[in-house]
Image 1 (spheres, rainbow, N blue to C red):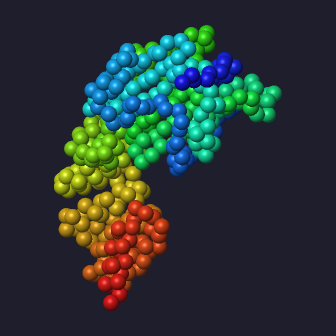
Image 2 (image 1 turned 60 degrees about the vertical axis):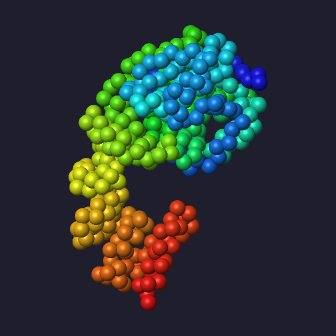
Image 3 (image 1 turned 90 degrees about the vertical axis):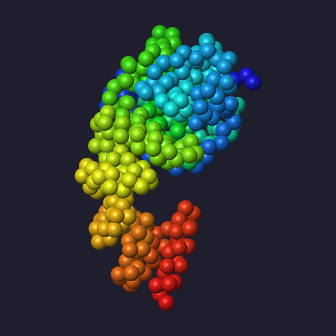
Length: 392
């Protein structure tokens, strides 16, 4: 298939503004940017096939088999590895980046289109993008704001499924079909490390003198060997293992990864609190209740106002026979988040034998909160049965 491409030189001067200011603490008035919440990932259909025959979560050995005809330049990517393939002038996509975890699993793939790929031949993808709210949007040419009512813009769209996120960085103008600049496919936990608007990707589709500047390097210029990146990478590795991003939950790997993230040092207190919390969950899943309780204590000490931390601590205390303390934790969770359905269910279970009337109230509140939630159907069914018995 011949991929249609259009000249795209007119956006380059504006991108300088983004590169200089966008990653240095925000865009100036001349480089106007807007931030919107991510969509709930409704549509994902696309008639532009980029990832096949690859699939995220494939072992590195299988990737080698599928793409053995490509000559990749390999370099470290924190504790993992990145591969860069340059298809040469005129090819679309020109650049392919593949990212592997230290467990030799493909966790992300990025495709770069020099001068942009026209989406005119891809009505399905255009329709998908039309249903998404922009995750980020900025004007490409600050000077045009003085003259144009609708200056050219670049928009980052996000969609995906239960375990993966897809990003499309798209250029929009009034005259032409949208142009795809960068496409990213990544396992959800690793998305913070593979943002489609990272400078190394943007530089691959732009340079001030018209030459291509993408280099494999060792990643050090992007901070890939510095403490925050390495810690976040381990946190993502733990998330993927704990929640089974590749199909199977691996609590032991999650425990190891979260501990390494904490040891390396997470500079964001909220992420550090969540690392202790997730470590506590993984330890709980392996029956290490006392160690799990210590981790949840750390999490609550760092951030005492997160309801999930108290709900998890209540569950652990119940396992350890501390019923009264467990009730206190569930009540704290509900006080912080009155519509916290799971905490209300947990509290109701404990109260059945000591305060049946309040247990009835909590079950009824729980059922009203989860009405229509498909994931809660089994627990809602159990709650109704318990209510029936309590009301006899």
